[in-house]
Length: 144
Length: 124
Image (cartoon, rainbow over all chains, first blue to last red; front, side, top):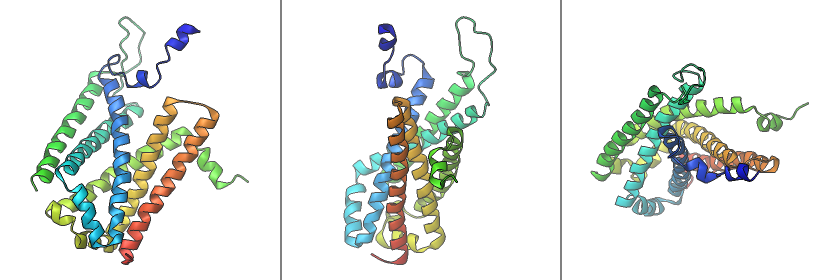
């Protein structure tokens, strides 16, 4: 019983990326980027609602958001959005049974066929696309 | 006779995940159009009061914004629901999270729709 309870790590266990490699990093990055994007969506809906209060209120809001700090937040949002999309498409395809390999006998060192090079490549491509999109976004936003 | 809300609350997780993926794909396509509209002119110019208001007055674009709002609210709050259900389980907890995410979705869609509708009709 004590041993069973000691294995319950809760949130700490969920976010620990060291034990399961890149797949676990992708797992919590997908969740963190999702939470970040939801927070941005709520903020964006509030931000755009100020247009109903007239030109003065809209320009006041722009003076808060269209700043170097606001643009850095937008660049991060672009990165989160692209990674979340790329990794999300990988997850959808995997859930459809594509690219996860065939089940086999459990033989030492017990490597799961689903955690294969195709999956890892997709994760790296998602990260690379996010980095490229962030660079492009930074060019547009900060160079404006 | 089973009430309609019962079907929504008791929806199978496999159906909910199909909705989650469907809303994701729809949102990706429409958000791309939304971003391209911002980049069709100089970014800072596209945020000028008159330009933004003109977007809301253009009915097809306003309808697209409404669809994006619904898709992202459903996807976002269902994602949050999934994360919260992964962290903890229990009958009362799960019920609170399920109902709470539906209420949050409705509130966000209502608030965003108010902006789209009022700005589109010129009520400000």
